[in-house]
Length: 345
Image 1 (cartoon, rainbow, N blue to C red):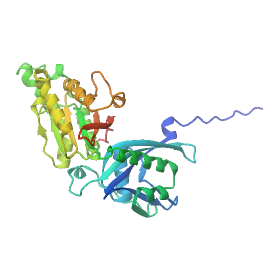
Image 2 (tube, one colour):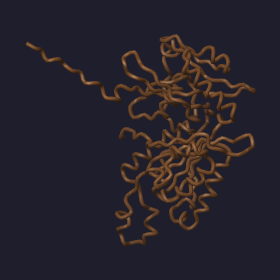
Image 3 (cartoon, helix red, strand yellow):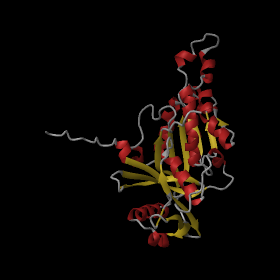
Image 4 (spheres, rainbow, N blue to C red):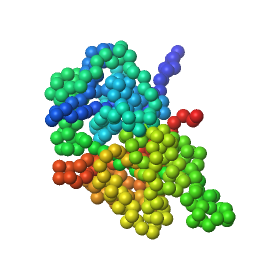
């Protein structure tokens, strides 16, 4: 008698891959670069703060939360760094996304828009130390961490580490024009500015909050049309900000004078100060992307759509801007993301 052999199907790829995120938190002390390291007693190693993704959490939110839990530092994400990949003892693989990051001041508005984090147990983290690059190289236990440190140092030496985020937000999904404009009580030109978000759009607007908080957005500039206002309203309210309304960003204003949008974006790119988010309509993205191309090398633009729609509804594009030694502003990294929907209330 031949017994049937049981066959165990391989786990889905999503279960074979463990996602995590962390950050290389840095500061300058005099002319020296320092980084923040943590000691894990379970592994008896020194490494950069990181941890696994939680349910309905983005990698960016995970990086901010894990650094807060393990070090107590509230950070703003800067330039994305390499992803570490390695096998686990149980046969799964782990991927850890890293960003360069700096501490936020205690009164920063972005902190109000973040969930509180619980400090890690001493059994998980029993040491947190700022170290100069040379000391950190000697203390880091893993070659991959030393490679990440080298990448950070390269950015610092090239004046590309100190960046400021310009976050482009296309408004979340709105009620269709054909549906909203069906009423004949008012002219189409009067109805269009009042077209609201759909229920899904409202949920997507909520999902944008932790993304803007992760990048330390301290100013929000938006079209005054309702679908844009409602997209950034959850973050504006959570952070205690007041949105800056720019008529030039409306669809009609862009159709009449696209150069006004260009001038506005150029001013935001060249500006100094805190990270800023700009909420836009799809038609104006053609002009916006022209400005982006003028400040970004071609290698970065290859990862960015070069045709309409550029961004889907509710999507976000983050430009990491750095000022060169000659005073010119250049984009050193571009991230494009669709915020993870949060659990329904």
